[in-house]
Length: 154
Image (cartoon, rainbow, N blue to C red):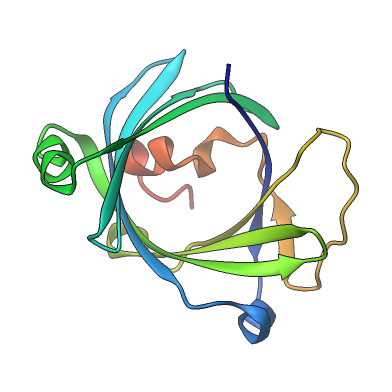
């Protein structure tokens, strides 16, 4: 079974930009969201697309299953969505042997910036850059499915 272990933080300031690689534009939509799981479709840079099933429990470790799908199919699936389409640009910032992913939201969620770091184990230590704000790993309001269905949490 596939698992994702990640921590999420709000971002304050733009100090991360100095080390960021070129961003990728992401559009994603949720096809279903229950207490048990969320099913989404994502298009990256209009070049590739994925269908993902992710467990919905909040926390560091979540089950995740992701499959490549044709971009045209993903576009058609987006029309079946519930809630808003999530639009964001994702930037990658190296951090020793890890990588921060900085999501700068646009569209209905403009102004939100979230940093995520994927870990190999839940107890892995990592440096927290000065531009990191409040940790929101356990706050479901900042999960993309919740943003799509409920809007910004503030």
